[in-house]
Image (tube, rainbow, N blue to C red; front, side):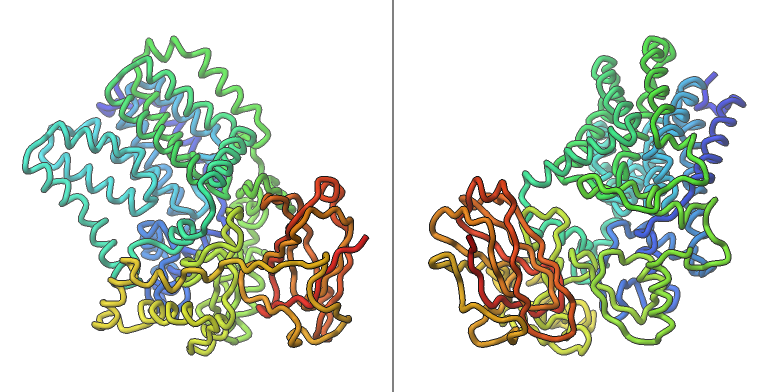
Length: 630
């Protein structure tokens, strides 16, 4: 009995209802969801599509989801249930379209829904407040049109429209369905094909024009922050491998199903399946090359849905042939520690577990924002980030903060709080600067000297001359009159790379020679941090070259008292080991003298240089002296 013709079996409906019941039971919000909610709140209160109300900076790379969420938020002005209900509604719609409009048989639909219900990645991100639920709905809508409406006049236009909406939801997800769109266009090679495709792309093109004119850039700041970080391609690939391995460890069913379907598709050689498999394979390759994500499984829910769609189109005989394999995969899903079907109201941990910087996000936030755990009498969920935000809002101060976790803090802090992200995700200038270290996939930036003062006062206080000129251009783009002639000229020049030379060498690492195993005049505890003989550190890192191989087990160094520094000892420019020097945070200004032992393996191998890197502090960094000790 064909589901495509609408003759749905009761069992399929029951499975769909069971799935959506599971999504509701495990519903939660991530901290990142409150990034979109802060923008929605600013829109609702007349500040515009902005993160910080005094500048036009695009911090979200899924604008369609942000706009839809903002539309609902405008009427409710309630963040939690509005976001949960919207996500659940989209997820239920996606499952119904899959079961009633795509799956070729009842058994195929049931197997597909069962796989999705056992996938931690798919269930976790069917809510979460992120764009994933909308992405699932748009993908399945595109696939239903491709499969069922080829003879309609508006076929290509609607496909292009759905594709453009996918791009506005998560741009890299477009590769999943790009082969299908290309095949549909190639099959109808007529002049009207181009017009139909262009008509469908109007929403995407309009957004790009708006983004360029309003924000000054066609892409969101996270895209620039990643591409300008200076992190090597090899480092991204290694992190991408970690991301895949992390998913296999926490959620083995998801990647197992994706890979199994891709392998079987090569044997089936069905046109639709092959095109879908090509898009899915390209997407997995992108995930590997780009380093994945910091949220475990977040990037794998969409390709899993595509794999399940491929599986659901196979005929019954093929499904029966591979039935033992599917039973095994489903059994694996049931027996994983984080199986969503078995997840109860007490799910989650108070401590954060990171696996190569990758977090199990629902495990982290469910104790506070899980639907079965949320404290309804507390608008701030009882979470420390939200509580701190409320305190800032209630204080009435116009605070400027640099924080890594900006979602709840920003939303509950309100429009009076300016928030910068140390990795440049919410700031136009920091996004254009290279990271402190080329091996740091987080891409943490060093705040230029005078930058916070520039933001707080509205006056350019940057000390570095070329960077100061570049900042003037950015201020014109992000704060100037949108329609002014000077701004339009600057917009074109900056996006064409006309001012990139002002950034050249900004964070180049100065290298100093260490003579006779010492540098500088030995300082005393409490000596002025900015004494004439001290080395004032204004770059991201400072290098020191011993000239010869060293094996000394200890060293002495004097550093400004209220900062944190990292020392990385090297041999032939290859890091051998590092130490993090914590400060005592005493109120008396001046230098602190440290004596520390090097790791034994560094001493045994030897070292010929070291790098000194300010990690955090007040933005004023200095070193009095350094010497090796026997």
